[in-house]
Image (cartoon, rainbow, N blue to C red; front, side, top):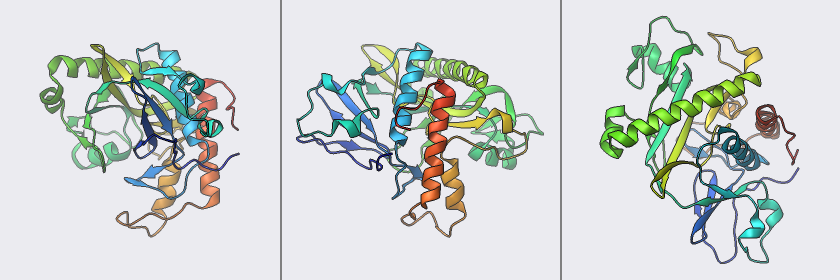
Length: 295
């Protein structure tokens, strides 16, 4: 197992760094590298999770192929883009995608199939999730009769902001908003049905889309442990906080500390790092049916 990759540096190129990804402009395309940074409560933690970026990248590659949806992936073969000779290609392998340059739609397309997280908190207070009224009597982790679409604005920092479908229409137009809703719901249901056959519940997820040559295509990551909540079906119980294959493990540990969420976060203990790494790898292997190459 290698050390976590917390940032990348390629000679002669300046990256645009997000919470997890480093993006390099290649001219006609982009090099998108998923680092091993991990964020929680809107903070990037000082500790990385070794190979987490490879899990996010390879599981997205799996879904792009499985779903058959138009997407931004061009290649994962770094020998095709002429990187400088001093580039540590080995450390970038498996965590890098060369992708199409798109006009990004400024909306997070969130689909929720179960009542959990902030949705559960809101439901307890008002019987709604993102303003959508739900039937009375639901419990924590209840499956919704029909998945719901709850868009949010994409924010450069801090929390994305939930918005109504009507506000989304104001931002992107009615035709685009309807297409994004319909396609996001369809992909979620297709992915959730497949995952359920593999013993995994995808409780909720978010998709990002971009315009490329007049077509809406899927971009960023798809149905990963960072963009989704993955639960083992065998231990799922309505009314209980489910076990997960995602970074909930890290969030739960942080909640046990005295960190106030307003100051720099603490480093993660080694056992939390290793257990989180194992959960991410398990998610990849269960979903894809393949052995993780960097195990």
